[in-house]
Amino acid sequence: MNRQLIKHVLMTLLGVAIFSCLMIRAGLDNFKAAVIHAGIFYIVIIVCIFSVSQLLRILRWKVLLHPVVAIPFLDVAKICFASNVANNILPVKAGDLIRALALNRRHGVNMAFGVTSVLFERIIDGLIILLLLSVASLYVPVAASYKDTLHNIFMLSLIFFVGLFGLIIAIKQSPATLLFLSRPVALLPENMRNKASNVVAEVQASMMFIRSDILFLLFIVVSILVWVLEGLTFWIGFIAFSVGGSIAKGFFVYCITNLAGVIPSTPGNVGVYQAAVLLAFYMLSMPLNACIAFSTTIQFVQILIASLPGIFTLRLLSVRTVLPLLPENTVTRTMTTVDETKTL
Picture 1: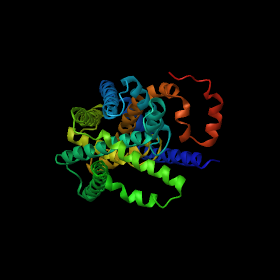
Picture 2: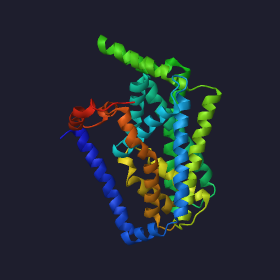
Picture 3: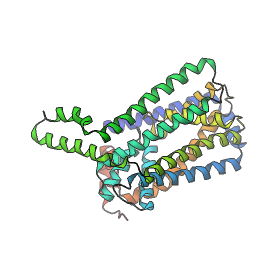
Picture 4: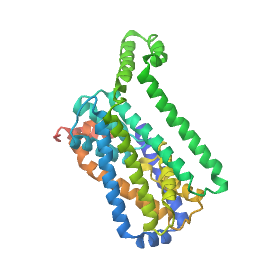
């Protein structure tokens, strides 16, 4: 059996196992009762907010790509939705790589730029989450036994995201930053040296989206708006499930949950997502009776809104775009029908 397939199956089973353990702990009857008595009106509001948020996510990536290529909004949407589907069915956030692959194959954009743009978007997301968490922490009572846990989560995340951000800025501002790569490259055989040198040059060139203009400012503003809107869904979710809690608590739980999602894990973060929400509830000494129902419903809405259109756009992008990320036996079966599919 292909190693990649084994890894995929194991990560999926891990997610199912974590979710099952949490479900058993919460009690199936409690879960059903919480879902049945949830406020439908508030769930509809959450669906609407996530829908707007997805459109804003598409807009901000389009804005970020503008220095290299001006892509119609609909085309960017197709790529983003397809990426969302892959993130929810493949482990370790493979959908992010699909964005770069699709960008390269449909619009001829260099792979290095596509990967770097997605990475930079993730770094900015991380910094915004830390900012929101810092503000929320000022207005919520964290249990004494979890204060060290919060401090460790915050500091490790800060070091990680600020470190990556600093590295990207350094590469952008000073080509000499890449000398540590250029030196070992010079020791490679000639055929490998030429390819590696091109990669180093492409990394440097891919930093052109970091700039000081109105579009880059728009990218930052839209990014903040995305996270503020999505943070509000947790507070509204509290109301829907009668959890009780302030807006600050909603943002706190939301930020902790998304920091857990930074680590590549199970497909769609199933299980990990619920565990992170449970941890945040413990940190704030919040009632746990509706925790799993709340987190599962919010995650289901997120996955549905982000991925449903992607079921159709994966076909439009052509399965060839996603083949490099699939197990070999899957590739073999898929290639027998790929030529029958026409892309737009």
